[in-house]
Structure formats: C-alpha cells, structure tokens
Amino acid sequence: MLSKRIIACLDVRDGKLAKSVKFVDTKDIGDPVEKAKQYYADHLDELVFYDITASSEKRGIMLDVVEAVAAQIFIPFSVGGGVREVADATRLRLAGAEKVNVNTAAVQDPDLIARCSEAIGAQSTVLSMDVLRSGETASGYEIVIHGGRTRTGIDALEWALRAERLGAGEIVVNSIDADGTREGYELTLTRLIADAVRVPVIASGGAGKPEHLYDVLTEGHADAALVASMVHYGHYTVPELKQYLAGRGVKVRL
Amino acid sequence: MITIVDYNAGNLRSVKRACDAVGIDAVFTPDPERVARADRLIFPGVGHAKTAMDTLVKTGLADAVRHVVARGVPVLGICVGAQLVLESSEEGPTPGLGFLPGHTRLLRVNDPRLKVPHMGWNAVRVEQRHPLLDHLQAGDELYFVHSYYLDPSEPQHLFATTEHGQRFCCALGRDNLFATQFHPEKSGKLGLELLTRFARWSGTPC
Image (tube, rainbow over all chains, first blue to last red):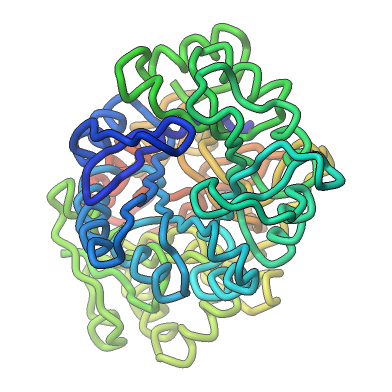
C-alpha cells in the first residue's frame, strides 16, 4: 500500500528561501540547499521548489540551486515557477528536477501540458493550480494566475480534468484562500479535485498543525500534503508530523 | 567502473548523481561499443517503453546491452530498463529485449481511490534472497513511479513484490542480471545502499 507523502515546499527567490503569506510580503529565511539537506536527513518524502524570482535574468540562479540540491538529496524533487516552454522544463530536468510544475503559462497555453508530457513524460509533468473560491464558476472554485493576482473565470474542476487529459501526471491544488493562514487546507476543494481525477493530487495551502495534514489526507482524499512554514520555521519537524499521522492510522514512511 | 547506458532516459543523470554521492565511479555513454565492453552496466529508463525500445534498437544499444548480459558481467535495470528485460510490454505495445520470460502489463486497479500512475513510496517485500536486497527489512519503503508492472513467467526470477491494488513483482533477475521497478536513485539511503551493493556485486544471485 502506498504511503501518503509529506512534501516540503520551498519558495526560492533569487536563489534564497522566501516564504509568502497569501502570496505577498515575502521574506528571506535562509539557504535552500541547507534546508533541503536537513529535510532529506529527516526522511522527507519529496521536495518542491517554486522559483518566485521576478526577473527572468535571475532565473539562471535557480538552475544552480536545482543542481546543488540534486547532488545531495536522493528523493523525488520537483521544481516550478516561470516554466513557459518545453525548453524550460527540459533544462530543469537536466539540472536534476524529477518533476516540473507548470502553472500560469499552462492556463494561457494549455497545449504546454501536452508538449511537456510528450517531452519529459507524464510522470514528470505536474500541473500546479492556484484556486480561489468563487461564485462565478459551476464548481464554486476558480483558477487564478500570476501568483494569485489575476482571476481567469476558468472553473477549477474543469481545468483539472482538462490538464489530466492533456497529460499531467500529477496535480497540485493550492488554495489561495487558505494559503498562509495556517488554519487548515481547503478540504472541500481538495476532495472535489482528488475524486474527479485519476492522477495523484497534492494538497497545498493552509497547513499549520499536524491535524490539518490528517484531515486533508483522510477527509480531503489527498495523496500528498504540502507543508511550508510549519516546518521551515521549526514549529514542527517532518518526523514529528509523520509520527502524529502514523499514530492516527495514516500510512506514512517513517 | 560502472557504465550507464545513455539513450535519453530521463533518470540517467539522477542515477549518475546517486553513484557520485556514494563514491561509485560511473560514466554514461551513448556509444554501443563502449556499452558492449562494460564490466558493470546500469540500464536506466523513465518514460514510454516503446519509445525507449525503438531508440535502443535504432542506436544499436539494444544489441550492445544484449552482448553485455551474455558476457555475464553484472547488469542492473531500472524502471523502464527493468520492463524491457522481459519479452514484451503492453505500453506501445512493443517487444522487449527478452532476457527473461514474461511481460510488462498495464496496472489496472479497481479501487477508485487508488491512483495510476503508482507514484510514491511503497513497502517492498523480499520474496527470494538476493545480495542487492539483503539490506532491506520488512516494511522498508522505496520510491516508485510507473503505470505498467513486471510480470515474469518463472517464479524463480521473481525477487521482490509490492502492492497497489494487486500484488506485483518489483524486482526480478537471473544470474548476472537484476532489475527493479522502483528507483534506487530516488529511494533515499536504502536506494543508495542498493547501488553500493551493485558496485561490489559479483554477478551471482547468492
């Protein structure tokens, strides 16, 4: 039986760690390579880097960070941010990322998912979607882009299904409403998507306490839970989270 | 020295990096002649089985790998590299290299809560002792990502299983050939230990 995965997400800006609250007020909190090594030693299941570097000139730094991390950690490792073309995805793959996340560019050019899937495989093509509660769409959830700043009118459920058809091998569901609140994942949204698609779903946004992980991995039907500030700031360690989940009967890799 | 077959398989560099991390001397090469001369070979693979097989045949690497296996030196197949060890794969479909009898089949799960691809960490159960698996204990988990599974015809070729909707083979081998569906290069310390063992392995199954 597959274990539920705990995935740590590191927001990297100009090669340094940053953590956002509701996608604004980012501040640096250290060296991503050191953080990655610590999590690897702690039996983290998977790592995600999001490059939130604003300027494209500085994007090269990210490739160096990816290479440095890939040389030291031997668990799956996923990278996103600024992927607009297959060439971006291929470069990240060569630098050492197993998986490449597409987000805004895929909304603007859905065929990007198909092209990435063809070039690097569905197992390496991850759709990351930022979602806002909305009265404008049938499912009650709407896709937002540009790091949460721009509404699109696209129904989140329809987008997830379409991305799966186009060849996404995994979907990250990030709730903008919950992001940074530390009040828990958006369970209804996560479950809606997880039940609709056949590919694994990673819940993102809102984790503050171990109970939140339990809730989203059981009631929310997520295959994996993304954590950020709750482990970056040392409130909890990865082993503590896993022990907690195991104690409540969730299968995790200890 | 380990030679890694370079045929554009996605995990090639990850395998090389994992070897580097544990001090194993490894090089990758797309040159069939260098592959054919290898004294220890890793045959990696990620992606589509038919695409991989077509590339191997077209480049002459299929014959080179066949030659290495026949020479009796240690060979380790990983993921699609393991699937192609069998006679055929339903992905494509495509013939495989046919080193072992059996087929690679689409993983079908009836439980709607189980996802395909089978992606993540899963417990590996050792069914038959092997020098490359001797460090594993009951319940140890390794990293998988695949939608097709190994189905060897002969029980003596099956060394480990895992379960996702059904129990299936995740490590097979015979003589100097060993192959895993899971990814040792992405399975943390347990995976690195398997690679270390491979670097020292005599090429006999016990």
